[in-house]
Image 1 (tube, rainbow, N blue to C red):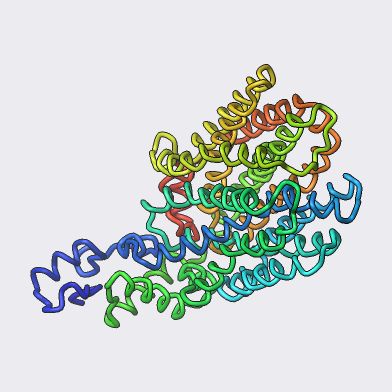
Image 2: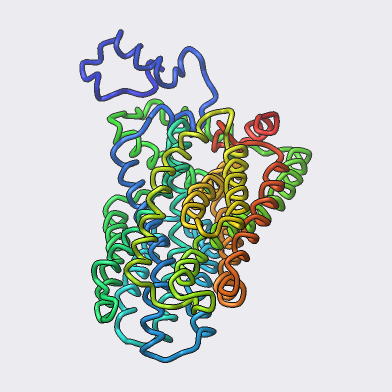
Length: 500
């Protein structure tokens, strides 16, 4: 076999140049290396398709940031029109999070069975449709129903993150997955800015137009997905569709101007089958893997819960802090936010936007890796939430620091989860643990109504407690996933991981 991969940049087939190109890719003739998908994807590098896929995932993530504040800004307008109690408002706020919970939970099951392309594209379509239908009536109950459906689909489409991770080169994955939630903050600022400029404090008749415009990221993600989305080669291989997986891999390589020759196709497929997808582990290997995953999954279950509590308590308590500052200690936590309040929310989210790329850089260093980055984020959050208890007069500054601290934990626990499980379990585990985090948010609006609205100290104390428990659990994780191959269907890779 003279050549494994021929590059379009060597059209003259110069032997010396071809030899040099082979040395940069998989030298099948000389070295006979163990071929893995990670090896091939690392050699392919990144191309325009990766940036389009990042845009699709980022726009989907924007929709979650938008949904959080739609409830706090638009729902009080409908409360006035429908004259309902704050208890019903608590339920209205929880509707989108109930949707998040079920969407995340079922996403892993559905995409594992039907793969990702059609379910995720359909989910983006339903999300777009109900965002438009939401404004059909000035009725809080209809609003709640639409937000429930929208929440389900937002929770569902975030499984795009696992698909993105599977096509990224290993050295690129750290930074992109670690920092992609910058789009969440951009989504928040986008919607708050729309509300600031379009909703007059005394006239909120423009709320329908605000919601329609707030759906632009989702409409854009849908269009891009319909045109460009291609199934993950890794998932196709894991589902036993070896030829389809290879063809998807070949299309990805083609986008980097690299052709995988027909001569080498059989060799690569044979290697992937032998090394990963048709290798039958021994009973001892299976028992060890099962025990490892039980311990790991138990820890991750509780870590996701407490990181979710930190995240959503910080996010949901912010409008309450602002409301109470304006109207006194007995203010309604669901009072309409004024223009000054919206301006404060904008200011307080500026810092986290600049922090997100730093998260991606930090976790790419071996010293930090995944575990230490999560520990760092929870430590910062817990320390400044504790300080906030004693300096509530400066809660804006403290809240800004907290909002810059907890993304270190919330972003990287997702990356850890993606890397810790094989492809056959990746979607299911990610969806399951996402749903446990969402479950906490269902109850947060009621906690806001009953506890946090009564005392500004309560939210700060809760964040301290959640951070400490999450930190201890993170320390107990059995290993770091920094630098691990996503080909951990191969038990040799899992063994390497445990030695880290």
